Image 1: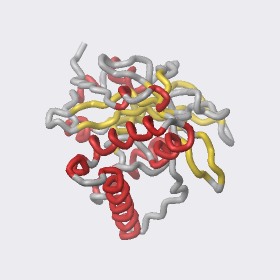
Image 2 (image 1 turned 60 degrees about the vertical axis):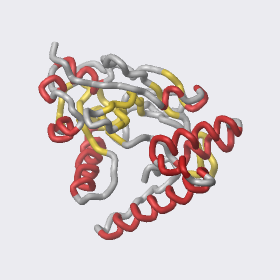
Image 3 (image 1 turned 60 degrees about the horizontal axis):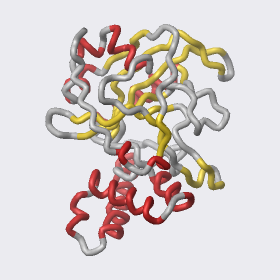
Image 4 (image 1 turned 90 degrees about the vertical axis):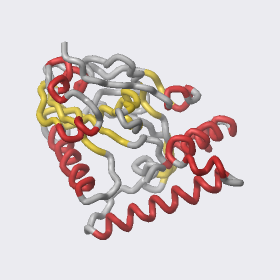
Length: 256
């Protein structure tokens, strides 16, 4: 068995457990690799040949949990289409945080990996077409030097999903600075204690805005930095003619 070089250290899993639900992805019938982002794998310090092997594809499909991973679905909430809703990862599982050889920390998430407690009646799955679209668009955004999540791989599941018609099922492996959203804070503010909200804010500062440690009001600093990051992000979208169709709190990360 080839060594994939996964190096998990899962800081989000050390937050209070009301921020997530621990569970494994739902295994699939017959996973097949469709595309592997070999250049991104190299950036992450991963073994490309191992990722493309049967064992590597099993990880991308959710059939195998790599050593050191702590799979979980994240909880969040917020205003969506005019209403405040309890949300969460309804079809995604965060495997954990991979630390690269250079010390960069990134989330490794499977999208389309099965139902979770936050699925709200959904099947927890994804179709091949939308997963390939996300792969292409996220990599295009990165090439244009616009902050974005990245796409490491897409696999088919050997199963169908029902939308308007039957479609081939697929799972995308997403790489992100983190998946802490505006909606993660809205969830904590609405449903959790002040201490849990503060723990989340402290976590966000440490992970994304460490300069806030030296300021007189670290929480005001966090708010200002998130505002600046998101304003800059939207400006970069507009420069290339990109319009976000559903810019809800569940779609916006506090890392910008």
